[in-house]
Length: 231
Image (cartoon, rainbow, N blue to C red):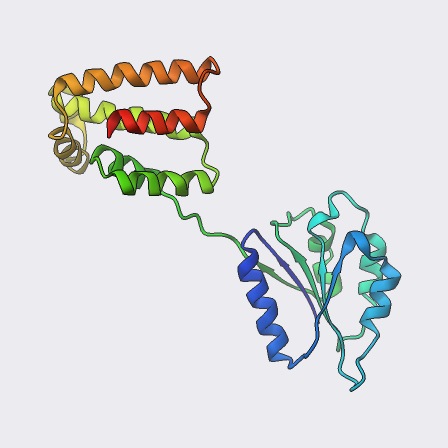
């Protein structure tokens, strides 16, 4: 049987492989990298049962294949015995244009995508920041950066949060038009800041924003500076 296991949650992929090996009661696993293996070597491994006649369990790591031409591999894989288990593994998501994905039907392969679930939520970060919850603020910020959310996407959201609080604090006419949920949250947060605080923070964030655009601050450092000015 042939499986194509791919996605950025490599831990999940490895657990799937381990469970499949356990299910088949296979004692050994052959690990190969496509860049260090020839199609002929793969064929030889796929046809080689162990001393007890058990069919091989092979994991072919294709993560580093890049634009490598794998047509010969695909042709050889089509000919491996049905008793052999071959897992084509990538620790990245393989697009529909990938040669193995395109050939999945011809190979009779089952596809399994192991995607990482985003752990971050930019609104949780903004809420924690303007409620002055220091530990939670940096915890949520770390999650955003780990999920590769751009600092240039995060910083405008900080400004958005500050504008909502300012609208509540200064009783802006536009504030009346906001939803009751947004108004209630902004009013609760605004109690933690004086009008002078809000004006000061706007001034500090403007300086940080300008410094970032001029290359004076690393974008991630700018987020930490902005957070400290608010906290």
